[in-house]
Length: 207
Image (tube, rainbow, N blue to C red; front, side):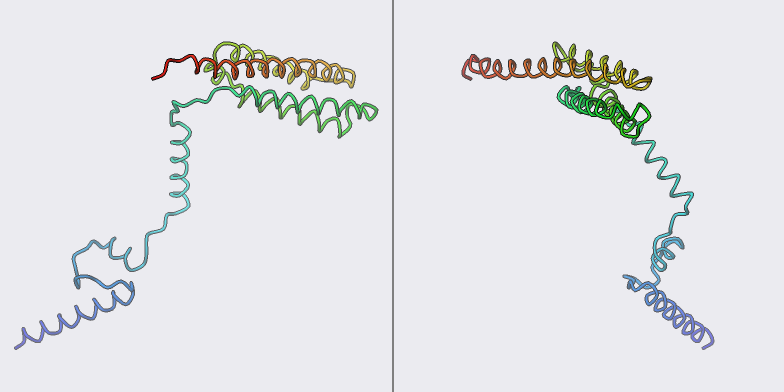
């Protein structure tokens, strides 16, 4: 009789505990008091464990490092058309500077435009004509790209060390001349290639 009472009390306590857990989690158990770890039970009742700031920061650093160090086999080729665009913008800015020459080299209008010219040439050198991209070019494209890169570096160094409005005027004239030659050569080669391609395709024997 004593054992029966103990079993009855244990069963009632078990049922009460199961009901309390179900009410707390709002997720019915498929099997009452089914076997699960304490960590799993707490996660089910109180929700997923939240990461501390330090843990989240370390995980973010690991992911960022993995992205940075991931090797890439698909390196794009240099963009000559983009380079022509950068030189075009720089020429326009340099020509605008000449309009403000009476205000002097320290004028905000002059300095702001020099800064924008430097931005254009930096973008050209670091993105569009990065050395690793030029390596993937061949023939006239590679020669033209390397020449544009050298010209851009020279122009950028001159802008970084400019001292007078007269120097800016000379840079504007020289850059305008180079830009026209670059643009003409690039367009000429592209047009010739666009003409050659259909002719070459037409000469191929029918498959």
